[in-house]
Image 1 (cartoon, rainbow, N blue to C red):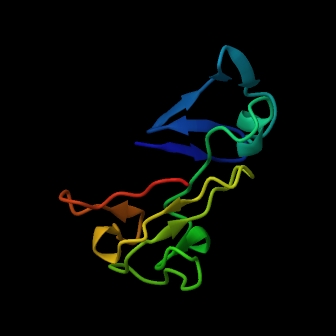
Image 2: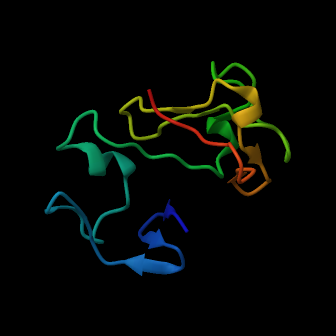
Amino acid sequence: MGLLNSASAVMIGDRAASAVYLGGTKVWGGAAPWAPAALFAKYSGVGGYWDFTDTATLFQDSAGTTPVTAASQPVGRVLDQSGQGNHFTQTTSSARPAYNGAGITPDGVDDYMQTA
C-alpha cells in the first residue's frame, strides 16, 4: 500500500483521501490537483516522494547511470520526485531489491534502501 497520485485524488491503497495534513498543516484539500511538492512547501529538506512504479526514476546502480528497463533487474537508486533531493540508494549490489514490473520487491533477507 502506498501513496499514489492522479489528476484530482490522493489514493492510499484503494481509498481516496479527502485531505492531506503534514504536521497539523493542511497541504491538500481535494479542490486542486494533487502535487507532491505541496507536501514539502513548509518543511524544506524533510521527507521525499518516491514512485517505485515509474521506471524513469529507477536505476540499477547507486550512481543513477544505468536505468531499470525490465523486470528482475536490481534497483540501486530511486529518484526523489519531491524536489528535496532525498534519493533512495543502495551501494551494496547484493542488498538491492529487484524491479518486478509493477514496483520493487526486497528479498526479505538483506535488501533495503536509504537516503543520504
